[in-house]
Length: 283
Image 1 (cartoon, helix red, strand yellow):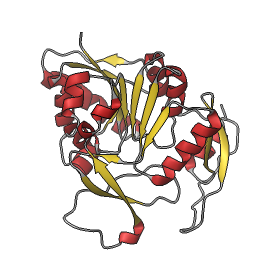
Image 2 (cartoon, helix red, strand yellow):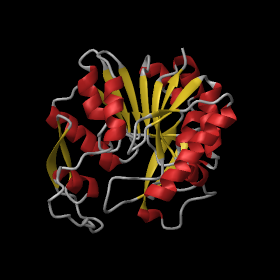
Image 3 (cartoon, rainbow, N blue to C red):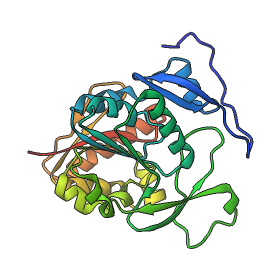
């Protein structure tokens, strides 16, 4: 779709200028998004969004399920998921960017979605505050790498609270499916969700990047995979250009080596940054 349309260049919105929203139809929902965002213009040109993950994610959902979407961004997963789980299910969208949160609420209202709950916080292994560098082109936000103090250019940041998921789990109920995309904070997020994951073992969709984990969480990629393998999860790679691959190995080290090799090939061959994984508790 959109292959013969003229490519649009991203627009950089000047600081202090309020964005103009435009409606974009995607996956049966109406999204009201800033027209200067790169993703808005791509969707308006008819392009899809991560179909190798989103298709499988939606296939996994059943009516009545509870979905936890951590790093919900503009709602590409949260809103279609809310439709799929229906009135007896619910989606809990966790997003720490106030701008993205407004897009989520506007889009839910326009789409008639009433079973989505927005929590405007970030997740981590501690209760505290983090800093998000403001974006003027797109919707992707990344926490600053850990520092010992307040950034010198504080005006360039949004300030957001972070909380361990384990402190919130009593309000979630049974979580059936968890999707997480938080630009390298995944390891720290799961260190703050040990009880939730051990008790409920939801099907988990996540982005895996050893480089991002090292930069933002201060942990090796292997530590993130080990966390799931120790809980008895299997690992499936959601390749972009070929069929999904269930990783098979006799030991955790063999599984990790295969996943890391696939990540390295993706970085070298496709100039990508991360692998998309689906993790499912065995049995």
